[in-house]
Length: 226
Image (cartoon, rainbow, N blue to C red; front, top):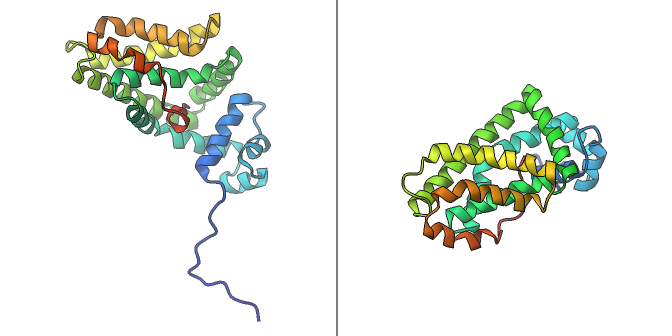
């Protein structure tokens, strides 16, 4: 007589979590542009089959939308980890610059990421996640600036709202400019522009913290930027 499965048994846990699939997708995206990216490539990174991904997400588009949704709300998590790794708010800000520079490990890598950004800008389903992430990142930049003012690393007359907006624009533009010239690394290039923007606002205490900012301690999830 066959045994009946108890009705109160929990479903078998997934061996590969959604977050692990998303991390695998990110790795595949770092190597492949939108036209080259396939479920098979993602499955290979994740240690799954393409069929398993279809069963879970429906399609490549479904997976990419789920990825976009997951990380659209990840700005606070990333900044929290940067703050934990760096006691100085300005050191955390410098580490943030290093984090996003990983989108441009080479001009070709930057071009691939821009091709995904093109989809985010033009496809309404992706764009809503892009906007959510951008606004959350701006809010966290403002919070870091506020913390730096409170810690007396920045002068008390600093307009936190305006500086956060300027930092957002400068870091994104600096990454693009590095792609044109490809002199040194994107991280070095972006740090130079970041320091130029901060210089008029930084107090002596903030300058003494600069050395800490060179030692990036936050890795992994803290530096996943989408």
